[in-house]
Length: 423
Image 1 (spheres, rainbow, N blue to C red):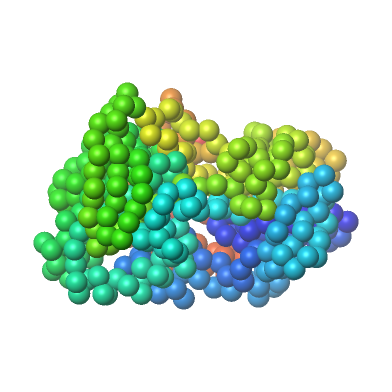
Image 2 (cartoon, rainbow, N blue to C red; image 1 turned 135 degrees about the horizontal axis):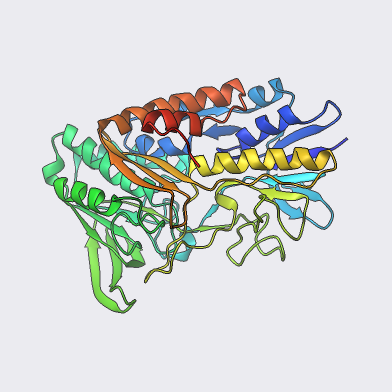
């Protein structure tokens, strides 16, 4: 009997559990271990932050849905991975043995790397977790009653820039609907070398599209920006030129701010030699398998991917939902192959497909493959993107509750974008 353990019950962990469960024999067992009883749909957090969604709209308890599929669930959380022993040490001191481990934890949010950053002990909000989005949710009405300057963006080392753009435009749309947009100066601060870089070296005409949208909505921007520190109501930013030399110092006043942090690996794996890189991300080969501990696989934001290119201020590479889904499917095939005594042969595509909602319109990005040169390099805009994002949220939530292992990013995105093949 083989025991396959999945760390994490998020956008990577839940589909991983469902796909793996369908491939094992009756003698094998799948267990999901998380530090929470709940799944939440991370892409909808920007809507939660401005009270367009409530928590219960994008979150549900996973235990009954996993157990209905015959998947064991433990919500104690993992304190430390012991790969040499093929064991997990849980937060309650107990241990769990595994034959195969799939790490799908997502990242640790590195708010501590910048003084004053973050919603807990800092002065900025975040939409990386539903708990953080709910903090903004609770304070948004007060801000709209007493509006002032807004600063939104992503700090140095960030790798997920799409949600920063989404949130900036969603905030702008909400303020217009409330007829108070004229009272709120907005500035977008980003480590990207130019607007629309996205950690991907740009996608199609993303630079022109996003710059044009920002001009139209009267959002100023600062690129090549390093956030030095944040105080109550003030952000200190150093802007660099394209050669990496200091260009200008900025002191930006704000009444409200949301800044995406850089990511690190979670504490349970951080610093394990052979398993992680210096930032704590899981090292994987072309088959999603760790080259040192060959019974450990990893999917999603927790894996190590080098930057697409060197930038004056450090930027990371995003891992989008479609990319994560392809990692999940490849991992399920490879573990199934190993259970049958064969080597792993499946590779994830690592293509980038993203629907970025702007509140009442949006932009869709397609980069196939993620690293240039690409077979398809396209950015499209229109109100249809907002409609597609809303539909996708409902589609994904229903899939997670239904326990379906059918890959759906590709199916949904292909239909939305009119693409016949994502390869």
